[in-house]
Amino acid sequence: MKANYQNRLGTLQERLDEEKIDVTMITSPANVFYYTGFNSDPHERFMALLIDNRTQEFILFVPALDKALADTDSFVKNVVPISDEEDPFLKLKEKLGNNIKNFGLEMKSVSMFQHEQLSTVFPNTTYEDIQPLVNTQRLRKSQSEIVSAQKAVDIIETVLADGIKKVKPGMTELELTAEFEFLMKKHGAVGPSFSTIVLSGEKAALPHGIPGNRVFQKGDFLLIDMGVEIKEGYCSDITRTFILGEPTDKQKEIYDIVLQSNQAGINAVKAGNQLKSFDIEARNVIKENGYAAYFNNRVGHGLGIEVHEEPSIHENNEQIAEGGLLFTIEPGIYIPGYGGIRIEDEVYIDESGEAEVLTSYPKTLQII
Image 1 (cartoon, rainbow, N blue to C red):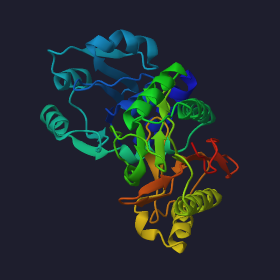
Image 2: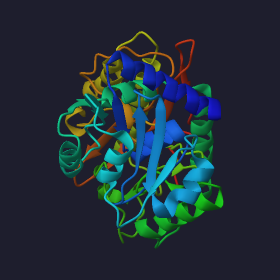
Image 3: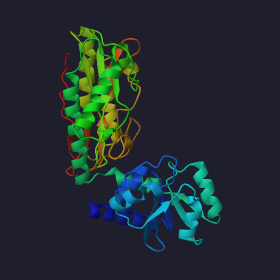
């Protein structure tokens, strides 16, 4: 793994040099982890990876209470602790000095407060957005990253297989959510990669609804969208929809349309195609069957260290697909007051340019 971090930092340094960036500050915990191997959420405290291209030096600033962990886990060994009483921006000035012409920041991650503090201590500096450089680098996954992503998928599919057996009359959405999240840790995950979604009946029409005390009833849709984060730092994300009891003809019809849409999206995946084609092919199946009004979001998103990252798979994204991309294909039909169905898979474009589906949990209509 040390070689991975060294290569990532070296590649970023080259790009920063091309852009004539003197110093870069990376504050997003996901990006700090990507470049150092140190995985931590500092909450309101200050944490940053500093890349000084003037001196070819890397410095990791961490909350003082995390120093011991950073010393152990971080590839960058120049670790500077910052106590709760210290001003981190004065500490930066102390370490970096004044001769900084261009300062690189992830503009989506840096708060207005942080930007103002930097401008105060480095008043004669120009600030540049290096977010696109980082996003481009993280976009293409290495084989070791895919191994970790597959491990996260394998765990969540085991959780789903074990947990769905626990569904019983009188159970609520929250109770099943608790069962799933217990199983996540039992099977080796750090925890959920996002808030677990368990929605039943008409609530399944809410793409990102919140599990509640609704009791499962015969004839319900049961939509389950969940994932795990593993200790290696990577995430999974899968959705399957079940029917409680014998499905109606309409439920079977809608399920079949969504399944066809999911497969059409996957079939479109190939290096050299525009990303929008994956969305369009999936969306057309739903549109041609008269349900276009009930699918009003993109068909997928990238994932890896974060459960939502680049690329965005939507009908206007003309970016060309290439080997190394990892993303979801997750069409759905959501009918207010009635219910909804979503089927979500994780898809990787391998180095030969072909689609490899990491998820393998059955997609045929399953009746509980």
